[in-house]
Length: 111
Image (cartoon, rainbow, N blue to C red; front, side, top):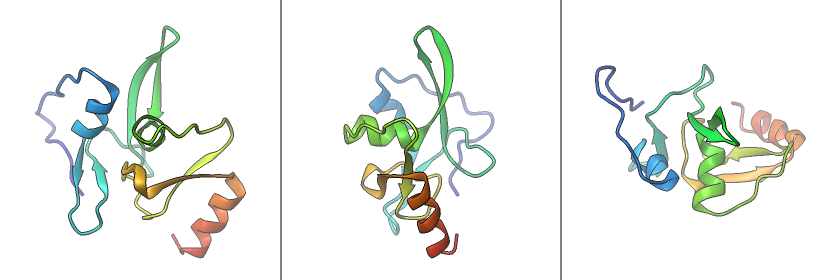
C-alpha cells in the first residue's frame, strides 16, 4: 500500500486532473492507480475542494470518474470498484451503479 511520507509536503497542482494523477501511483500488476493522499477508515481516497464557497471533502474515485472519463454520477448512485480496491482511482476500474447493485456486487465478490 503506497503512501506519501508523513514529513513530505503536499505538492500544488494547477488542475483537478493533475491533482488526481499526482496523488496516485500505478500498480503495474493490477493497473490500479493507488491513491496516496488521505484515505478514510475504509481505505477510500479523499480530497478537499472548494464547492460553492464551501470547503468539502470528496471521494477521489468519484472525482476521477467524473473528471477523467466525464461520467456524471447522479445523486444517490454509487461508484463501484470493479478491481475491489477501495484506494484505486483508475477510471477504467470504476462504474456507476445503484446502491442495491453495489451491495450485491460486494457480497458476490466476498469483500
